[in-house]
Length: 477
Image (cartoon, rainbow, N blue to C red; front, side):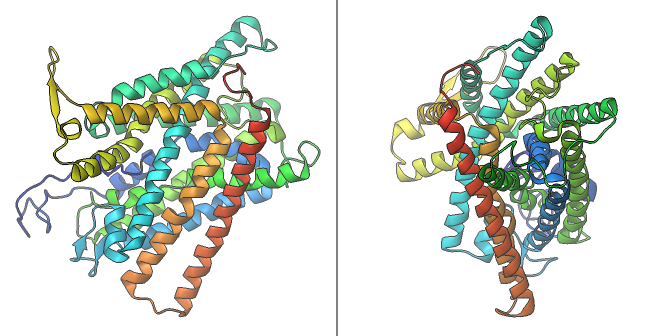
């Protein structure tokens, strides 16, 4: 769910160094208590989110052979590179070396220099894109609730045209309000609610797919996916590439692993525990993804919708679809903040550093709230965060294409954050000799994933261009 979910998962407190004491770890922070099971739970709840909804569509583009194979390959690459990343939590000795608390800390400690800035830029661009994607996804789910009730009252054949713009604006207004709450992403119950909501709608989507297959008694689809004729030859190529981006998006979660590893107790060493947790969580996630993608494709074949719960492959039970889509909206309201708060903090921290004497940027105004703690209001925070949400909302209104945006985000984030930086950090950490067999194999893996990410990006951009040719902004659909 989050690029910087360590803010939700963090269990450490600032404390004076108490090396080797009963209550403090070697870095002077409160004793960590995380285990392989808590780490697995954190990863699974952070990962299973809106990306799962497009997997049936992705499988439909690739077919019964390539679809499951690509899901498995992405899971294997993610597990392998996450294992490499686990070895980079401590610099030097895996048991007693200096801890790196975040992904960026690990990049800085192992690679340093220009690569840290590149990594930061990719992260923040990705966060901006996710804000757009979540705005689109939430509005689609709110539209689906309205259309579902319209179909229920007027029949399945009714056009039930709905505009996404009012829902995007409503979502934007809510996010403007929540964005003014300092440290909103650190609210303790936020990750619990998000986990419950994501499992709710994912399970409903899976259950409806299984029920549809049981009802018809047959598996739809073909070995090679959607056929030429249903789409043109070029559309088939672009959509296949775009499907890779959708799968990559579902597996783009390496960025949170260092933060989760920082919650683990030792002994055994954190990297050993984290590798076990990564294996368990990737296995569980992949099984769930396989089930959702394959049963969705089996239920609808070439007609698999881009979003399993809003594409109206299902019409009944309408109340269950409403619950699922409401769960998506609730999840995304919180997830938007968890993703954006690190970006907000980055801009505000740099603004304060460059203009330390500017009262507009630095002055905090205390606003009393009856029956609650006073709210600390900062004018720069109010203006900048409001402008940010407005910009993401307007972009979402101009190109509300869920699958295209998911594909672009997957292409943008998967190779650099899940493959390139973990591989490069591992090579630097272990001092693997250049042109040695292991170095060559790691570079081949990285280059292969780069090619896949480029293909996914090209396919997704082609999808956006194609959709823009027929899309009329601010019209009901």
